[in-house]
Length: 427
Image 1: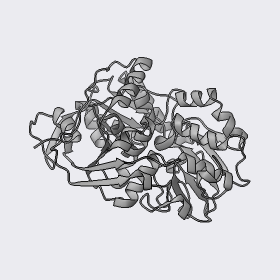
Image 2: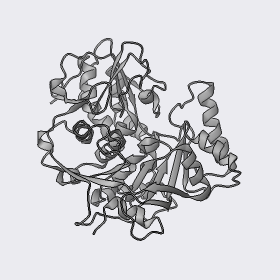
Image 3: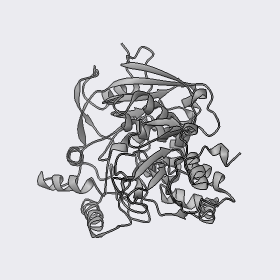
Image 4: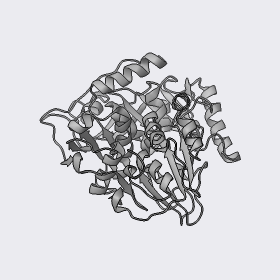
């Protein structure tokens, strides 16, 4: 019997030779990360364990991205814990404000996570890096502390579900729409503790930014990880990141699933039948095509996050907003995911477009995605956002509402002041 790509990567990182779904393993970790919410707990546990040094100061990243620039004294203290720990242990990958970005956009951009790697992070959306053909998943802060000490973590080998996407995408349909449609089909627990393996001709044609968006939201279906077999697009992206940023770890290995690999389920989707999607409150699975969401007015639009804060997301948003104004009474908040994306958006004139349209262009941050800052919702307000979760109170008041969508739908909605198909405002 053959192996899936997920099984092959986990097998390569542990001592067992014949791992199968359901087996428990202890595996070495290529890279691990924590942020300003989760790393302080890991640091406390690290110290409680009596540890004197980290397993490898080059393979840990500490990224204060959730509440930074610090919004209050508590968030300032959280970030300071990371800074002090990084200085104490000479951790190379510590990113202060001015260098930081949203962690799940920053690490791939810097070439720190690579195909074939096993990556853990004390953040559920660590599954994003599966777009590069690596196994990556979120863990608890205590697991992260153990990895800081030993460079290992325990796992249960997940079963895999294969999602085959074929056909040609319609205009305005993106990777975000594909994953929202998929979650709407299988539900928020439809891939519970399974690997979501995305493949098919439509996936092969997707740009890397769209692949990151899809793997990012695998956790919204309950998955252990999302993953896409690496190909020429992956290699081009990774080599460019390595060439530009010159990370110390440059080698990588590309895995692919065997033809006779066993799957718990196989799902197929004709993407030519998929319209731009919107997830209505209060679950990412509560999805509808945008043209079936009628007369939903909005107070705020958020374009950014680890799901959709990359340069192509800002490009499509700026294209729609160019020479237009947002609806009076609507707040448009655009948050690039990294400093490099910020600079590129300024260089290409996207930042100017957003400001001239009546929006604001912010420093990189998770910000409003988790109700942190830079756009918290008041009671009764509605937001359409390119983020990944729309649970009750996710972006602020428990009586506010969050609708999830692609950057194209979000930008069009900012102009109309209601949830809108991009074709209404753009060619």
